[in-house]
Image 1 (cartoon, rainbow, N blue to C red):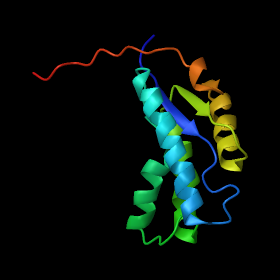
Image 2 (cartoon, one colour):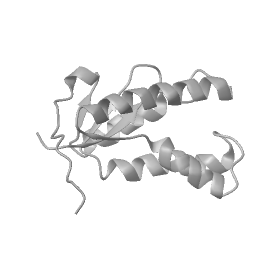
Image 3 (tube, rainbow, N blue to C red):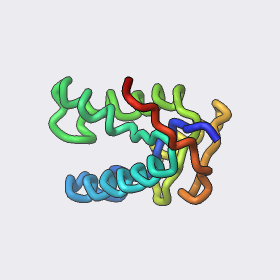
Image 4 (cartoon, rainbow, N blue to C red):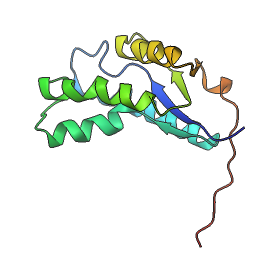
Length: 128
């Protein structure tokens, strides 16, 4: 199987009441899963990895503030247009559910567990 670009979708702010420590725990958990997707030979991506620096550059002070909201979901939705699949992690998340809906509309494969993802090609090209 060829290497895929896989969006990791799951709870980030859901159930945190805006607590930065809990949000960081959720993002760290997603990043750990992303590392395992990478080990399987694919390229993982999390929308917040792209959206948060953009929001910060635009003046956002905290994830979930008005400025960050203009980036969080739109970045993920644009990113989905380039993905081959979505890995939906467990937990309540309206944003992740929406990512899955958009992915299904585009005909992407939706995985619900890491072990559902087939191994990709892991050969790396060597520098010239």
